[in-house]
Image (cartoon, rainbow, N blue to C red; front, side, top):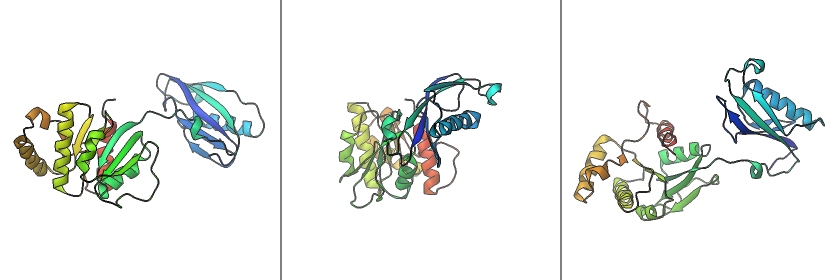
Length: 256
């Protein structure tokens, strides 16, 4: 909710090279600014227009900004910004053109799982967070599109994941991790609708799992669907936040 009167500025259209995508937004009040439509002179001018309107001036509903030399920005594209006055107490979120969310199933609420969930709050991800233990999830309220679930055994939750989910496996023990991988590969064999299966662990752990999965009847092509270790290559460090950044970068790089 907007505590004070504000002007909501959203990117309504774009052409060419621009700093932000359609749907990016900024709420401008007399006291402060929330969000961003791209920075630079584009944003400076938008803030000035919004504050002039808040002081009683006229407000154009839509303004075209060529991002060339005249605006002091060299992107070269064009941005159209939509301006809307909102009274104090207005529901800003209800007016935002929210981006689609990629479904992400995260198994495990340990240190790395918590770090992933913390960073994921600001990303276009619909998180389905599962752990087999009671009381593992942090007390902070879930973000938009989130679901938290206690499921024991955790592998039982695999069948009900949203189609197209990317799956991250990092439970508190290897036995549970193995059951989760097997359940994901079984679902892939039957439905083929998971976008990604990744498991935290070393190459040694994966070599052991690969042999056990082969003994369970999973083919080489099926086993190749599992990424282990996970995370974009080249990111060193084993701190939970470092791992989380590397893993979420890998998820965001998946094709839509």
